[in-house]
Image 1 (spheres, chains in turn orange, red):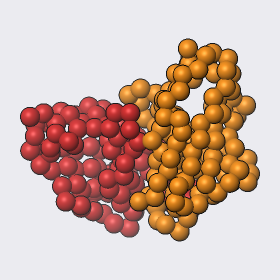
Image 2 (cartoon, rainbow over the protein chains, first blue to last red):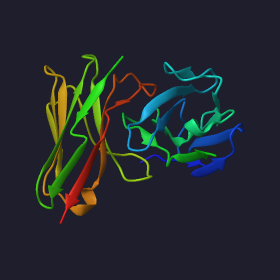
Image 3 (cartoon, each protein chain N blue to C red):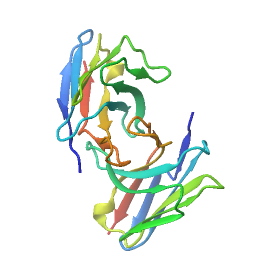
Length: 116
Length: 114
């Protein structure tokens, strides 16, 4: 199947700092990518839909100024958590589908963010 | 928007027994229903999916059934093995290209005991 790579896999940052997470489609182009947040023992909650060359679409209740999304190329989307606080600590996962490649959504390996 | 409910939240079965996980969805327009398996700290992996024009699909020990009228679908795992232990998520989507969003259920933690 298609490969989605996410980096870093783990990051620890201090409160008030910003953290950038990268999501890359390695062997296909992705005009759309999705960013999820998953708290321990909970489900994947969609945060936003990242659209190449245009603004991201955020789900209700997600602060767009706090979670900045940039999708500057067909293979890369980035999520920046700005002014991070301990409550932002979570598992962040991206996903994408292959254009014309069917219905399966492929996920990155996730990023464990810990804000101290 | 779509709402997906999943039961049970935890399920413990003995090796060799069957496991059934059930989901309901709210949006009658949803037409694609995948199931994902997620091991601790890992990415979700698609194990089986079904479209709304099909009532049942099977892949070796795994099967999924869909009842569009009742808006529910189920995952069936037969002859369970310890390596089946993981968290399973159902999801629903209105497929309209690569931008279609998935709405996930709350997950079921399956434990297969020896």
